[in-house]
Length: 550
Image 1 (cartoon, rainbow, N blue to C red):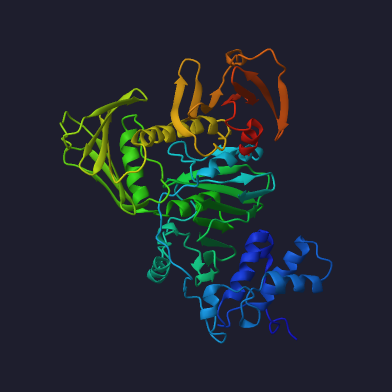
Image 2: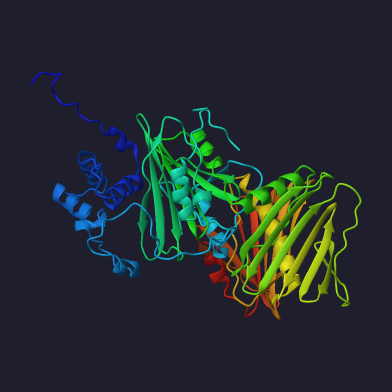
């Protein structure tokens, strides 16, 4: 056969650069697709062989067996996994790329997973570098990495100036799945998106879109969990430090693996992963094109307005059972910025307003004939009063007026105010530590203890920062303090009984445990950061608190 008549051999070497996770995803998507004849069998076999080599299978028969069992969940046209929604589907019905979710849920924006913060201490193992200095929020992240793996337990692209917008068909498709606000609206113009693929089971819905370029590719995957994820999601990475990049209130973790880049974020309900043969500039530009929820955009705009005057934005934490029902941001004719949010939980309502005054004004709040209570906290006087069925609180921080109004509120209004300040105190300390590639870890506080005090203090003379928080219930209490030192001479001195100090090693850190009066103190150092736990007798086991840091 002449050279001109020989079929051109397809080059599949681009798959060599992809991570194992990306290759597995391609196989899953191929066999989840409808029988439309688009499958490239040679490519599938090439990928299967690559996976077999990476997992060191002894022969091709073993590789094929793994392929059949692990990467073909719809063998012979029938799901190997049975869920409630599967029983309602005819056995002869073809698998469709059009989603038919097993169940629907209201999207809960700004949701955080409280237990996630404590696990962040593991981030020290791989190192963190700052990608954006301001606006970090660590109340919805669970991230953990080593030198080889990463897991979950406004930049401008210089590669291409042509913006390729998301098609209306794809936009409508994502709207049906309530994922539109999480999907990028821009990608480099050399890429062409493939048809979106959907995978559903009893616990999650996954949407994946592959983007194919001239000699490279990448994919965008959004997983929505109806129940919290229990299994670990692992991403391969090389020795390059994980980079943290914040966008619209979401923390994206950027990790490299040879010639590929991956960015991922997880808030307890949605996990977004962007990965493939992309430069850092391209992947950040793709992230920046994610518009996010309108609520998050409004919050960011208010925060930016206050930052112009060197002020911080305080706002309520996410509360279990409450979901967002209203949000608005506006700049009035007087150049005053106003931000409003409203949340509901059954017949309970929480409203919150922040108003930035530019000139002396008098805001009138309606109230009934009940008394006004003055509650001083964080050096600020908060005025608490009622108005028929609602409880109200208003206070001023410089020229910024804050207002809370709550209907059928069943909790302590003062504790909610304390939580508002605690959130900002924590974030300020976290930012300071991140500047030195350190992470602020938090112990898991036992149920029943209530937040009673917190503060963040920056000593501008020594450039040292301190974070303190206290939880109490009756005689029980837990105090937690973190101090970022600049000199060894500034470390703390603790009082103790004339009893031996126990040295307890956990996670490659030595903790000094000693008694004093009716409490137990634990003190330890991580680089130049000093940590201390003071636990009243009978409140909690100090070693369990130490272990909860991981």
